[in-house]
Length: 247
Ligand code: MF3
Ligand code: CO
Image (cartoon, rainbow, N blue to C red):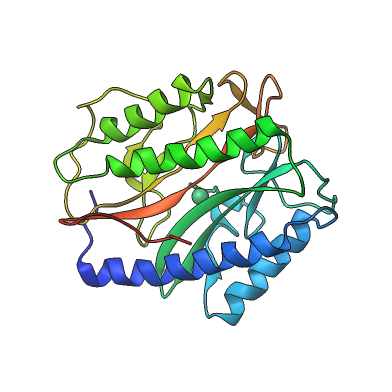
């Protein structure tokens, strides 16, 4: 399962910290009127200035540094020259490469003043990520993470997106293990020291079903309900999970 040494985890943490600081900068810039195109340009410049590269650009032909998914868009939306509106929510996802080592983190942002239900979706989706991280302990199984997220989401009346899941990460973006955000406790791969993987729940206000648009990338909710996502890259240690992308 691509076990990493402490030295390797440290290198991934450097990528993770740069990614976290990039998200902090983004959060200051998300206001009504800005476009996701401008945010993408900012990220490209910011990473270049800090000696890093955007791993998503060119990955399987993906054209941009970031994925930018607005409202009922679930993930893998294209940045575009369309102003964000007061009340929108937008998820910015990116993978940062520092000296060949990667970190991956997505964050949903409110644009201006959002509705109470949008705000609730944001808060609960973030909380579901941390419920999952709590279960990322040596001796647990991946299904314990999956179940913690699903039961928390569904008990709050939210649904869990199925086709897009967390994943191991290292020098490559996608490595074993697979980390679904729905499932059964005590099942799946055993969690062991030195594993590094993402947890990245996408929760919907409506039904869980999603479809991919004609651009081949943008996933949206079939019922057009709002969707939010929070993602961290974490490393498993004897002292518990370390969040490499903590902001
Ligand atoms: N960052 C995404 C993930 O969480 C991957 C985005 S797909 C890409 O796995 F092609 F845009 F990179
Ligand atoms: Co990601």
